[in-house]
Length: 265
Ligand code: ACM
Image 1 (cartoon, protein in one colour):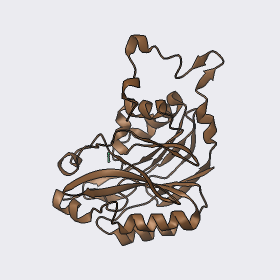
Image 2 (tube, protein in one colour; image 1 turned 120 degrees about the vertical axis):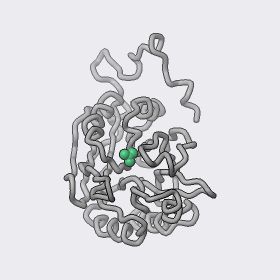
Image 3 (cartoon, rainbow, N blue to C red; image 1 turned 45 degrees about the vertical axis):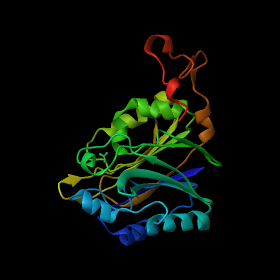
């Protein structure tokens, strides 16, 4: 299958400009799965919770998601997008998985970064993995990268690919992310944004890594672009790393415990 990352510069509070930027890049590749950045509908660096509220949408009433749902039908494809989500009086920094039949699932960011703590509620939907015709898809958002438990949890639940919408400002994630691919023997697709919003400059360099931790494709630091790779998700079903070593079966959970008690959500 072909996967594409749509690296662009979301405009704060301008949903139509963000749709137009995505539409402009979408035609460059016919892909089975497209991944967009964190908060792709709204932009990132809000002045206040009130401003974020004004720029948010609910999942059931969203111009932005309606656009992606229509494209998923027209192109018979899947999207993972970051989404500034309103749910009654609460805001979540969310990621939405969309397919030709509509919304498949939502993940809400667990680990909030800097001022996000003043704006968003921490995620309350656990770490779901969604079974799709493409394969099993998990999602994390940006600063979740810092927590290896989250990647491991999704991999243990069977995620063959982890889509990772991001608005990265620190220079570390792109370094560590291929290692998470390698140790979990799954694909990871980090789609980062570019540009500057007030005091924050985002670092681009979106990346797709394979089960060996090899970087298949990497974006620039500062250009809007679509980057793609052909991947075989079935490779992520095999956790062996030698004929006598298996990344999951060889774990010494008797010594350091395991995450299995949390795998039911
Ligand atoms: C981040 O979590 N947006 C850095």
